[in-house]
Each structure stands twice: as structure tokens, then as C-alpha cells.
Image 1: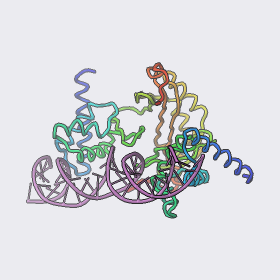
Image 2: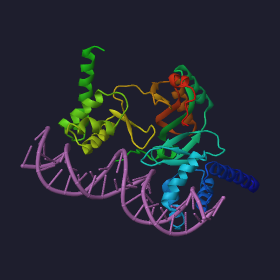
Image 3: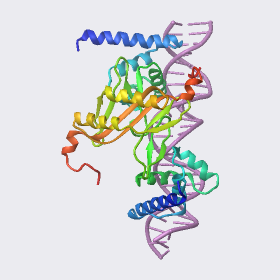
Length: 157
Length: 157
DNA sequence: TTCCGTGCAAATGATTTGCAGGACT
DNA sequence: AGTCCTGCAAATCATTTGCACGGAA
């Protein structure tokens, strides 16, 4: 919470990104810096379109660069791609955050992050039963949040 | 396995589809019947493209009708849509099949279906903790199957 | 200076839709 | 007969790419 912490995180974050770029002989441009700063400040889920709106309106970073940079950030392990529902990708800040899964309200779209060690253990067990080495997983729970439950019959007419 | 069983399943399946259509004042056309028959015989995962290839080549059902019918089959509860990986949808036969989750090999793409009651119970518990009413879920485990483990270092160069 | 990056617009690929003639009930 | 359907081609939507110029190293 202290300003100092955030600033340190930022340093470490940016260093990480710069090293990643160097390792691939890529340049640390103003656009990449600006986009990295934006994602650093938006830990919630967002889409490419969100970035387009934020940056294209100021005539600052083009759509093409946004998509190209998002791919880099995913490759660098800074973001993860999620396919929640519709025909577009959702991104989530991952750098230095521990793994979690999602609980999604089908009515309002609200997303809650949760972590459950017991479930993870059972997943390992299942993988073993089938002779798999588990590398990663995705768990999404879809339901109705407490607010939407109260709104009565929530289905479309 | 007995012929009789399959035939009975088919009757029940088709009746179900016809009733669904009637309920929405939709017609049971030859195209819809042909597509329903195809999915009934393809319980594995498939894509819209698979159907296009199967039917367009014989100049029998158009792409537009395939997409429109897939939506109907999902609405009827006969198919479920999955977003496994890339930029297209995968469909899976659901009618009269019990729920299951997936274990996917990242090397060869093999998909194993599994069911784990303990995990499902814990999911209910998690949803409750956050005040959600659970409606459905998706659990995907990604890993290496036993065959691919033996092939040595399986990463791309 | 030398690549690499960027912006633009055009290309792509999956899926959707408008329209006019055809097929169920 | 009256709807609902289908096929076609054109339209969308998110995302990708080719190309010529501009900017980091």
C-alpha cells in the first residue's frame, strides 16, 4: 500500500520487461513503455479494445501496435490470455501474482477471483491417475452473483 | 453396443430435437435432420469447419445453415460449445451424456474426459462462500500425456 | 547508420446477416 | 397459403499483416 512498495514493484516490473525485450533483440520504445505502464495500473481484466479506446483516442498508440504489444506481454509472462465468453480475448495481469481461478456471474459479468488448494490437489491426483504430468489448468465457475439473484427472473425474454 | 440400443437412443434423440423445434415454431427440415444425424454419429469434439467440409463438399448443406443449426443444437441442449484454444469454437455432443471435464495433452493434443465428484463438491462450496448460485463450470487440465513424456524434451526449439 | 517499430489500410478467418426464391405444415 | 428456411454473397468483428516511413541503439 505504501508508495514505496508500488514504486519498487514498478521498477522490478519494468526491469523484467526490458530484460525480456533485450533477450529478443527488441527495442524498449515509448509505445511499449506506455502500454506496459497502463497494464501495470490495470490489474483487473481488460480487452484489447479497452487499450484501443484508452490510447487511440489520444492518437498515441495505434491498434496494430496494441495487438503486437499484447502478444509480447503475454510472451513475457506479464499478462495471461483468458477466453471468458464471447468472441474476443481477455487479458489479466499476472506478473508476481499467484495463481487463481474465476467465478463469473452470467447476468452481470462480474468476475471474482478465488484460490482453492484442495481443488488443486485433486487436480494433481486426477492427472496422475491418467498418467499425465500436470502443467497448468483453467477452472471457471459460472453462476449468479448475490445481486443478480435478487433481481428476480434474470433470463432474457 | 447392441444395435437396438443405438436405434432407441436415436429415436429419443430425434424426438427431443423435434419437440424442441415444435416448441419454437421451427420446422424439421432435411438439412436440420442431416446435421442432427451427423452430430449424433460424431460424439468426439468437432468444429463448424468439420461440418462445412462434410456437407459443403457434397453441395448439400450450406455454411450459413450449418452455423444456424449449430446454434439451435446448442440451444436445444444437444451440443455444448467449448473454447479449447484457438480462435474458433469446438462442439461436443451432450445429449444424455453426463457432465465431465477435460485433460488435454499440450504436446499431441489428446483429450481425455474425466469426472470427479469431490472437485465438483468443492466448487459448490466455493460458489456458496461468495454468495453465488453455481450454474455450470469448465475445468481444463493441461499437461503431458504418458506417451509424450517418454518422447524426451517435448518443447519446441 | 542500421535495423526494428510503428501507423495505416488492406487482408484474414470465423461467424453472422439481408435478401429472394424454395420448402414445410 | 402462409411461414419459416435456405443458399448465396456481402457484412461483421476481432485480430493480423504488408509496406514505407520514423525512431531507438
